[in-house]
Length: 371
Length: 248
Image (tube, rainbow over all chains, first blue to last red; front, side, top):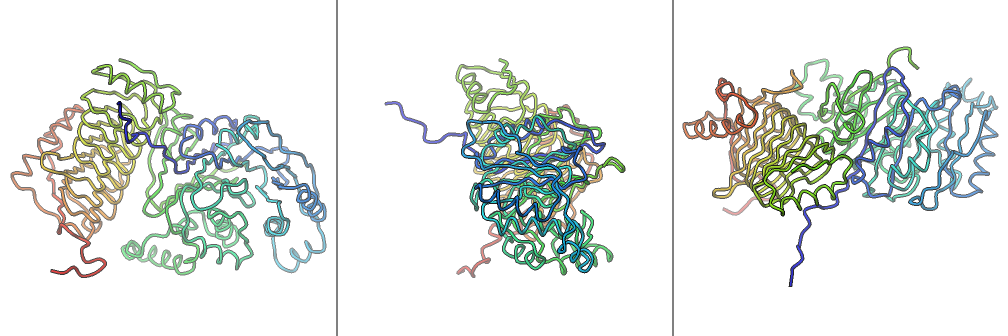
């Protein structure tokens, strides 16, 4: 009798994958490129989540906030559209074009709206008397829709950008949303292997707010502390997934508190006290202040994240680099991914390719005047 | 024997490699490799496999006697639990190299990532050797239990970076690390100390480096121009008092 081998050397590995790139000169690239990059890391996910963020895709509506909405019921759609009509001037609204894909089961309904806030009494009260900005108002509306309308979720809400995500492998999600028909200057993508939280449509990455978007590989074990801290500032976590806090935290630190992206990254992945002790006086004081003020913003646990906006792209690892991240440059392009091969698939001969150190952000900004 | 790996799924590629090995091939050349996982895993025969392109993670895991030559950069987890044989990488490589490696050689020309040589071990004649030509990230030699790690700091793409990161030798309790040109003692873990090489070290190191230089066409005298230091664990059981006092 021939014995079967007891062990396969080829285990099925899964551990989330992410990839992204930015064209600093604003050159537009079709969605099929990022799809090739993330599809190379197919086996890092398990089919329970894939998603993309794209910047520069709505040039004809770039003055409007592009709301991507996901609806689990027609009632949710009706209530949300009533809410939008009350609060916004809607320049255009339409179904987000999709393609029938065999692998995608029971997708929810996706609609998009290009909007500007109406100058209602509530708007005047907020802007004239409470010192709120239009962005603050948008954040408030996003939180209200996500929290108060059952079955309605804002997938993205920034200008000239959009997030496309769902349950499936990323290449299936790209096919479903017809991403080959979009062109953008910055793209990020995520292949999900859910560990602690459900694999549902809203739980796929990226997580967004305004034009911030986050894709993340890892676990944020400080989620409870981060979530409670954000609630004090009116951010409500509704997506059942740890990564959501990163998007809101960066909005709070960068947009509201005015930190630079570099400093915000140091709040999320602060150096250890032992390292701070060894710094010169200025840095020591700065980092001590950041850790004291933003102790509740510190992200604990392993992570690699890509964080994009219309301004640029940032890659960041946890302090002891428990998740992979590789960066590369070629001309005006900068690439960041979980695996070097995912970059080489779309940029075979980069000029420079390196792995950033844990806790040290790689910050790439669009060239001045491009946007 | 030549295999074109372009667009090939990793399982199909590895099935072809395994069939070639079973068929008695002495040399196998893989072209257009990009990201395929597990190349060379568990191969039990002294065959030479050349990889043109960037191989995926877990290259040479559980390998037992084969030689893998990578003509480009490598990724993470190379030589995971490798038993015998050799992996040569003509570029840089990623994190967690030589995880639990118990024999054979891993020669990397340029930089490596975090946790390189984690929990390498040796037993009698089985003595893994991992040599890094460039710089290394944090946790070099973490939990190292045996074998030899060599860090040269010579062939880096990131000139100006520190030769090694923080927490060097955390939890190390066996084996030897040789570092060309000395270490930054502020970055060493509490478990290790720095020593001068003795005559036996000099002899062993020269043999390891001659081997390394032969793979890359380098001059061993150039490598030996600078002084090396030796990093050893202070204790064979660094954590025996971590949770409770052990009875004497």
